[in-house]
Image (cartoon, rainbow, N blue to C red; front, side, top):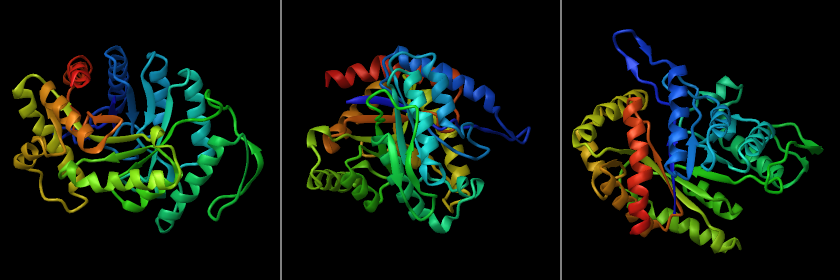
Length: 341
C-alpha cells in the first residue's frame, strides 16, 4: 500500500489585518514540505486546484513542476484537476511535460471539484455541469491513449487527426485517476472505464463507504478489467503529532477552516465533539499520534482493500514547523508501523 500526502494550500485569515496569509510564502513552504516528503519516503504528493482567496494554489501543474526539480522519487499528482472547467489538450500537455521533467512521476486525479468558482471564471455554464465533465473526460482519455486524435462532442470544437505533444514517458500514457466524493454514478463510470479510483472521505464514518467501494470492485470486473490491475485510494484529513497538546490545539485550525467553508453551505459551527468523534477509530479524521494514525490506516486497508492512502495534511494552515514535523512522523514512524502490521 502506497502512502501519500495531499494539500490544497490553505491560507488562514488574520482578523487583525483583515487579510489572508501571504500566498507566496505558503507556496514556498509547500515546496520545502514536498522536498521533505521525498526524503522520508512518502510515495505520492497530490496538489489541489482552487480559485478562491483562502487557497494559495490555482495551478497545481506549476507547483508540481517546481517540486519535480527538487525531488527524486515521489510521484506528483493533481488532487484534483477540475476537468469540467479545464481544456483536456492543455491538461495532457502540462502533465506530459511534468512527466518528462520528473522522469515518469506525473499522475492526474480528475474530478468535478467541491467548489464552483472555476466555471464562471473560465466562461462555463453550471447548466452543463455533468455533460462538461463526461465529454472532457472522454477526450482526455482518448488523448492519453492515442497520439493522433479524432473526436467530436457537443460542448467543444471537434478534433480531426490532430496530434498532441509532448508524449508522456510510458508510451505516451499518464496514470489518470477518477476522484469522487461518493456519488454512485461517478463510481460506476470509473469502474466501467477501468480507471483507478480515489474516494474522498472527510466526514462521517469511513465504513459507510464500504458498499460504494465494493460496488466499484464488482463493476470493474464486470466490465472485463483485470482485477490484478485495480487501484483504490482514499483521501482523508490527516495530521500527526507525538505531542497531545499539539493534537488538541490543532482543533482550532481545523474548526476555522470548516467554519469558513460551512458558512456558505449552511453548516452548523464545527464542535470539539465532532473533532474527537472524527478522531475515534470509526471516524474519518486521521489525526493523532503516529501509532493511532497507523492503526487507523491499516483498518482502512482491512475494510476496503485500498492500494493507496492519501492524508490531506494542511487543513486550516498549521504552521510550517508543525507541518514539517507531521510529514516527518508520517514517513519515519507511521509508514514503518504500517509495513510491519
